[in-house]
Each structure stands twice: as C-alpha cells, then as structure tokens.
Length: 508
Ligand SMILES: Cc1cc2nc3c(=O)[nH]c(=O)nc-3n(C[C@H](O)[C@H](O)[C@H](O)COP(=O)(O)OP(=O)(O)OC[C@H]3O[C@@H](n4cnc5c(N)ncnc54)[C@H](O)[C@@H]3O)c2cc1C
Ligand code: SF4
Image 1 (cartoon, rainbow, N blue to C red):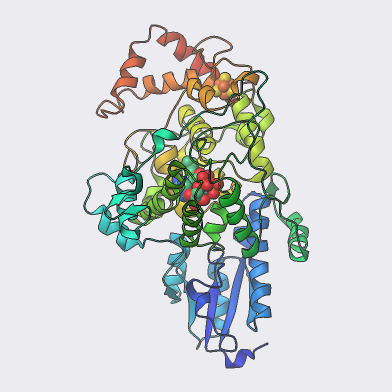
Image 2: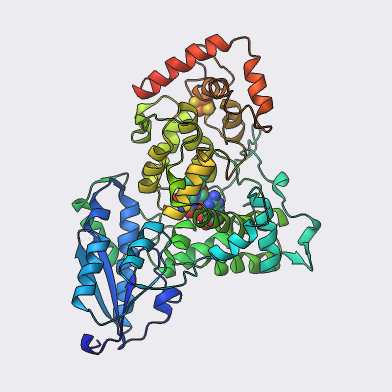
C-alpha cells in the first residue's frame, strides 16, 4: 500500500464512473494518486430506494474499491451527510493536493464539483460529446432522433456501405414491432432466451447485510444483476449469443411468458461505467459479421445504443436545467397508489408490470413508455411525481437518462420540444402488443361501462380534455377530431371521473 504522504493527486470517484479504464481512473498511478469515494448519508436515506438499485450501486463501488486496493492504491471512503460536505471534508484534509474527477453525468453533482474547484476530466462514457450534439442540433429546427441517428451512423461509420446504410435503409423498424408470438393450438410455445443468473460473492453478501440500514422497496437482490465488470461482460456475451438474433422483431412486445424478451439488460452497466457503449456496439457488430443475425436486429440494437442513448444524453445537456420542471399540460395529480403496490389495482397489465419492477427493478422500454408513463399521462399525474418514482425504483436510473425520457418522451411535459406528439394509447394497443388483457377484469375494446378498460376510457378523455392544447399540433389533429366526434363523449367523461377516483382509492 502506498504512503498517503507521497500522494500527488486525489482522484474522487463518483457512482457513475466505476471504470478502471476510462475517465480519471484511467490516469491513476499507484503510489502517486489516492482514490476517494464518498458515501452521502442524504443520498442513501432521503428516499425510499428499490433494494436492488441501492445494492447494485453500493456493491459495484465496493468491488471496484477492492480491485483498486489489490492494485496498490490507497483507497478511502468518506462518510458524510452530503456529497458537498464530504468534498469539503476532503478539501480540508488535503488543502494542497489537486482533486481530480471524471465529469459526472448529472448536472447537480457537476455543479457541486465545479464550485469546490475539483478538476474535471472529460466524461467518456458516451460516444458523443455535448458539444458535438449541439453542433448537430444547430442545423435543425426540431431535434428528430432519426436524423441524429443517421448522422451518428455516418460519423461513427457503423453499418455503412461507403456513404449509404448497409442494406439501403437507415431504419428497419417496419420489420420489427411484432406482437408476442401466439402459437396456434397444438404448436409448441415460443422459446425465449433464459436470463443469466449471477452468484453473489463475499462483497455482495456484506453489502446485502447493510441494506437493513435503509428504507427500501422491492425484493432484495436475487441474482438478476451483476456487480462487477466480469459479470457485465458475461451479460454482454450472453446477449450477443442468445438474444441478438431476435432482438428486432419482438423489441416492442410485452409477452407474459418472459420478462427479458430479447432485450440486452445492459443499461445498468453502461450507466455506471462497467461497460462502454463502444465495446457494446463492437461486440454486437462482431457477432453480426459472423453471420446469422438479421439486419433488422443488428440495426435495431445499434439504433438504441448509438442513436437513442446518445440522443437522450445530448438532449439532457442541450436543454437548460429548468427542463426537469416542465409541465406543459399543467397536471398536478399525485403518484397513483398502484405504483407502490401491485395489489392496489385490478388492471392486469399495471399490476403485472409493477410486480415486475418490484422483483427486478427493471422492465423494458415499452412497459416504461406505454404502460407506466402512458397511465401517468392519461390520469394527469404531475410529471415530476413519475420522475421521482422512476429515479428511485429502476436499476439503471440516472439523472441524464431519466429526465429526457420522462419529461420529454413519457409525459410530453416539454410541450413537444423533444417529441412532436405524446406517446399515449388506449387498451387496443396494449391488447395487440401483450398477453395481459386475456386475464383482466376489463375489456380493452370498451370505452364506457363498468368493465371498460381504464386505458381506453382515459385515452379518449385525454384527447377531449386537451383538445385546445393540441389544436395547433397537426400530428394530433386526427385523434383529437375523432374524440370530438364520439357520440358517447358524455358517458366517456363520466366513466373517466369514476376511473380516476377508483385508481386513487385502489378500487380499479
Ligand atoms: C419513461 C422512461 C424512462 C426510462 N428510464 C431509463 C433510465 O433511467 N435508464 C436507462 O438507462 N434507460 C431508461 N429508459 C430507456 C430504456 O427503457 C432503457 O434503456 C432500456 O429499457 C434498458 O434495458 P436494456 O438494456 O435491455 O435495453 P435494450 O432494449 O437492450 O437497448 C440497448 C441499450 O440502448 C440504450 N437505450 C435504448 N433506449 C434508450 C433511451 N430511450 N434512453 C437511453 N438509452 C436507451 C440503453 O443503454 C440500452 O441498454 C427509459 C425509457 C422510458 C420510456
Ligand atoms: S384490459 Fe386494459 S387494463 Fe386490462 S390488461 Fe388490457 S389494457 Fe390493461
């Protein structure tokens, strides 16, 4: 172990920079640099976290500390009431040493580090810098993801044939978006890939023992998530081997006989730095080049990583901090009780998806968008209520990714700055894309009556309620006009009021 008296720099490691080979840690030299982590009491105790989320963050940090320790570094953990006070303590202990960190991916932490004179090295957990995004955005009136994605494909030279996309089309989504397979009678069920399970080690066990110190929700760690780079690499290999082939076609499906579908489950590792997006894309391209992976699947996956992920991070830094507070539809509803208790509703889809979140702190993109956010938007929940809930309940939550996904995409709270049209749907969409409706007390086709699907009723009521707001939005003119022409509008409004009451008192 090195002698701290000979330290030349202090490297402060944040929860989102757990990579030995990127950012500030890539420059660390044993014997010269001291490594410091801060455990903020406020961060750990001010909210009710999903147990697996808290466990994941703490255990990933402990594994990295142990690796650094074994590599000859002096590693210190400061326990403080907040990040700021921890850093102030650090500064007071070492007034003459430079403190260096990787630029964090959250605005508030970046502000704290800047205000305390911490030297920030570039955050290279992304393939696109905020400056590159801004230079792209300056050429467009509206920030359409599809154009950003094409720019990324060319710029990064991924799936390109000279200056044209491989296969002649940029986006093969029309081959995707299949509903869950529904085998006919006598046919075998569709086989989904088995998820990888992760054994816990001694460090995991020690962290698990600490969980009782905190307020948590959801099931304790159950082997769904790895807490090391080795585990993250195993998940990446498992994905390219078993799920990439069918990633595209069933990307939007919500079958009830699998929780992973063909999704990669890589977001938590990417977001804390255990995996780099460049290596993830390269692993998928390598597999594609070996043959057997349809273009629609590799294109769909590449679009998620170099398109959506980078676009969302670009949006986060492009818009001002006030973006998180936006509430264009001026809605103020509280969090529905069913978000904390799957038993608090008879809606099969919602009860199932909340039970899934409870079990693993994860559901794929479509339940996040078309169930959780859709319902929150249709009932008029305050956007920040959903943001807070998602930030503490998902394994992969991070400020940069939650804010645009919830405020811009899920709740349309930015008034269309990101997406020109809200993502809303009634029961017909959910019925087509899932197997939930068969086992539900409600009927997805019905708008009115005791057994009307709450999504269907609220969808029409939302269009009616927000008719004036969407008057100038040409992409909404058809559904809004269709709602206005409904003969049963009065009954829809009445039923919508009953549904709202029922959802808040747990009777629907
Ligand atoms: C309301 C809402 C909230 C979300 N909150 C988060 C969040 O807190 N953290 C998070 O990482 N993702 C979030 N997403 C995006 C997306 O749902 C998850 O990245 C994805 O479900 C993670 O599972 P996966 O790794 O299996 O993804 P896959 O479907 O296998 O996709 C591969 C990768 O693409 C990236 N990606 C795809 N879509 C997005 C997107 N919209 N934004 C950013 N990255 C994307 C992720 O890194 C993901 O790992 C949210 C989406 C919505 C609609
Ligand atoms: S009928 Fe409506 S509430 Fe029930 S599962 Fe289908 S979409 Fe969900």
